[in-house]
Amino acid sequence: MKFKRSERLIDMTHYLLERPHQLVPLTFFSERYGSAKSSISEDLTIVKETFEGRGIGIVQTVPGAAGGVKYIPKVNSDEAMVVIEELCQHMESSDRLLPGGYLFMTDLLGNPLLMKKVGKLLASAFAEKEIDVIMTVATKGIPIANAIASYLNVPVVIVRRDSRVTEGSTVSINYVSGSNKRIQSMVLSKRSLKEGSKVLVVDDFMKAGGTVNGMKNLLEEFNAEMKGIGVLVESENAEERLVDDYVSLLKLSDVNEKNKQISLKEGNYFQSNLTFLP
Image (cartoon, helix red, strand yellow):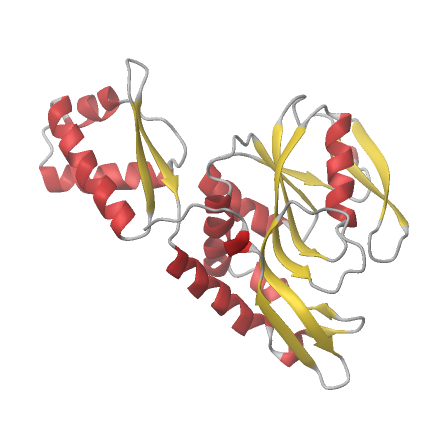
């Protein structure tokens, strides 16, 4: 079946968007549409220019016999700022304040459109890293990790606080919570993570970084390598930060429980040596 150019462009765009970070040979598109490679290359040039111009991402061409094209989700700085400002507006509502200075975020983490935006921002931050899997702790980090994974096209590994029969044999470690200095445990199924994996660690809220540091120690049990840390909200007033190389979207700068005021600002996202679309 012969495709018109307009049909090719629509189908090609959809195919690439559904498969981020996956190398697609030109021969695949050529056979799919019954078109010459030269025509496919021209179509991809249109897609590439549109993606970059509209802030969708990059269409990367890989030369050679084993080459092809790859869609890499990226954002421009203006788009990133709009999302971060939207998050601040959502989270500064006084009714989110919980005893102890914690914030209620469950509704935001359950908002698929908002999490999609968060996922693209953090995926864009680590797009140049070689990542095999995303790791987070149950339960609130899961929506963020899944959103990032959909753009990096990698699986998610979930660390739990206790062992479950359905997980099979597990690896368990004890770690010190950074905020209250308590000894806590975290558990990961041996089948969840391959030895030597390159891992992006994700957390929804980071105070001193004890949980993230615990996941880092857990990775050592699998001889895995931590390639980065992505955080939705970090606390600005942590007395001692146990991790220092991370990317955060928001920073909780002040909580006044008496007046029920919450103050947030942008995290270190724009200071993290990221490359943005023009």
